[in-house]
Length: 623
Image (cartoon, rainbow, N blue to C red):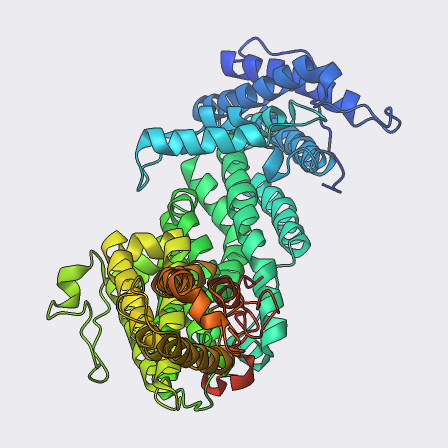
């Protein structure tokens, strides 16, 4: 390119009689080639006329064939007459032909770069390439299915549809005639610039470990968000397409495919795949950052088989090794953050009771965290697979409420870990029930928090699969036990103030005294519990139905049998059976007549749990 296309032809002279057949063959090839070179390198050709174009493709094929034939006949002539003058002319003409081919190779690459973008490479290049038979870590059928489906999504979408074949024709000719170095140099220069531009367009930046460690979290998280879609596009379109294109253009030489592809993509690939490792090495990784790390791990792990297939060459071992290192470092970081998460639960020291016995912020935080964590089921299954758990401290109850060992109850290390964290949290919640002065409120607090845990597990597909239906049923039963103890402590005096045999008619004075005592106990219990809360509708209804079943029928029967005795002498029935049902239905919303209390608002008076730096609000996923 940019060189003067030297055209040379021997002087016209009478051919000697002893001219060899080899010289005749060289002369014939030179004539054909010289004609084409003169035509396509003339001083004033049409600006849009080129040898390798749709209108002249036949001539281009004949030219390439003539160049190859000249190369062969030159070798034959050198063998029989190494001092022949025609060899000098032929060599000069060969150089001019190579200059033309190199110029055309560069032009086709540049003019068709938008149609030779990796995402536009046709599936036909895969089918015809050596890549199709390259051994990989996946089965041949799986490999072919992926590449054909991916390429079908990004078919050649316009421009010169023969550009790839033109490049292959030129490359084959230059390689076979000893000019591979010149051809490959042009190819690498153009394609490397395209790879660099594409990665730049995907906002892939080269950061050192020091630069990453100096970033504040908001900046780093923004870089991670950019990296997540970029890595998929880079692997499945950019690197995949470059591999197919190199394989098609240089199909005559696997060594050239390897060297060109590796030189073009390795620097960009290492930049892309080193980023997660550098991120995983930052210090002070708080538990809330876990999910971004799992996002990167999940993306990289899901692409690993494809990366191995694309970067199969020995010269690309550094790329494969970098991906493995990044996955390992991300796994280390995730385990470290999980350990810190468990430690933060153990060290949580807030002592202010939650207003109304509602759900504690610690319970909300932990269960939202675990719910998000369970969504990464495949990733955490690998990360936690061989991670031995050591109980940091004795707990007030065993894993299952009996003497069973964790590994005997759950099917995977992840399940054991999740169950342990929940147990650790419930033990903490058990301790936070102690400051309540009213024992009944303590049990209501325990019932509310355990119900929140159970509902979260049942509503999270990931958690439910990990812990199993038996776990849910077992803990639902425990919620009922807590609720039963609450009911007995909060309403026991009200229940016992009613007669054992409500159908028995008694003296008016005795009836008024008994009903008056019931009224006093009911009013005291009601007023005491007006600010108590049961955020979960199902548990709230269960408690109210149970209370109504114990109070309303007995009270109604007693009232009906003794109503005339109760109505005399100015006795005022403050709570009729109908009133009791209405008052009960108004309880546990947090305040009388409020109608409802948001589950997000319950317990807001307890403040935040500082060691955990709460920011996982219920039903708000981390973006």
